[in-house]
Length: 210
View (tube, rainbow, N blue to C red):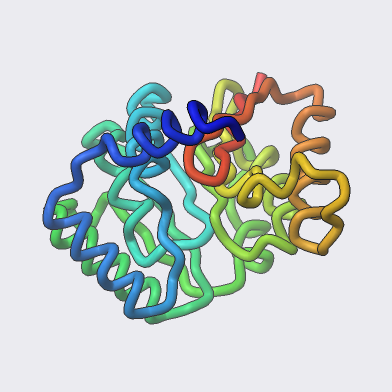
């Protein structure tokens, strides 16, 4: 990355101003050892959620509530977010963040369990938005499930799609980076999807189901 591009990236990441709700959510995530989304990604999630006008959304990986609050702040007031996480402490932190943000309980559904077990139980073509930010080795499976869950016109968002700029370097072949390369190729090759990658944070892969 050139110096100018690095400066621009740093500028955009530092541009969003976060309130006390977000700062407390980030503090909880840090205490739990959760790597929360960057401020740039947080702002992008809110904008993307607002643009989709989604009424039903699924979040794979709670991020201790940081990403969920961002999504809910962009979604319509009647929208419902389903958050899936196998760690009960992470889900508890997410519920605290939702409460701090003044989000009514009937707008959120938190499910404790492995996403690989939970997702197949969700209804086909029933969701407007799916956000993936969980265990990287399972991303290919999550993408497959997400395409099944999304309605036509629904939006898929995948965090960390560039793996800290490692995906673009063919010499790097560790398991995580290789998996994320496969995810990008699978999304691009899927005729049901139109997609792009935004260089925000560590990369957001955004796709819409045709």
